[in-house]
Length: 216
Image (tube, rainbow, N blue to C red; front, side, top):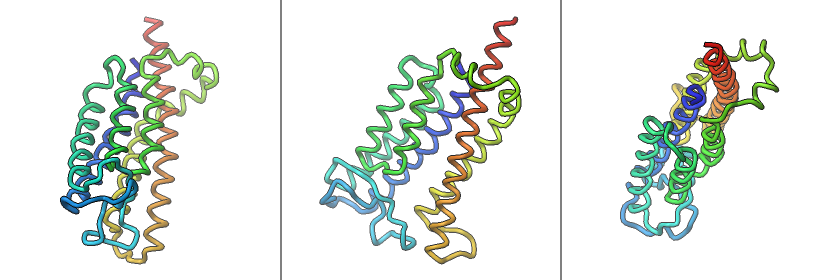
């Protein structure tokens, strides 16, 4: 089992599982009303906290309350699964299926890129990483292997910060919607870049661990 890769996948699952629950919470606040469209705003006008804080989502359920409750339930299942069950057989398929379900019940549109990335990593949890070992030099693996945890922490913080801005539009002493949007996008970009670095470091660390286990 590639434990470092598993940790990265787990972080992605937890972050966007909670993100889906957040969407669901705001959808339930809109009450037992019709959605009138497959594309909805998870945050309705009554609860919108800044100009761009509407959180677009897709849903096949034509009711805000039901959509929101399902998003909360599935998001919670994803969080628990990502923390406890990524070691199980068919974990990558279950991970993908849960996130597709979350997407279909108002869990958010932007998460698609990240859960697809997480699913691709999840397919590597029990793989030998021979190809990565060939293309990543020993020196590169030694350097990048030390930074996967700090990079994952940075990625997590930046992505959560961007999700917070998307919903609440809160950055201390800043009220300008344009500046808030720029900060949100920059934070998300840094988070994605750090996530990629963390992934490379996790792969390098798992390769090293496998080599040490082989030599024992």
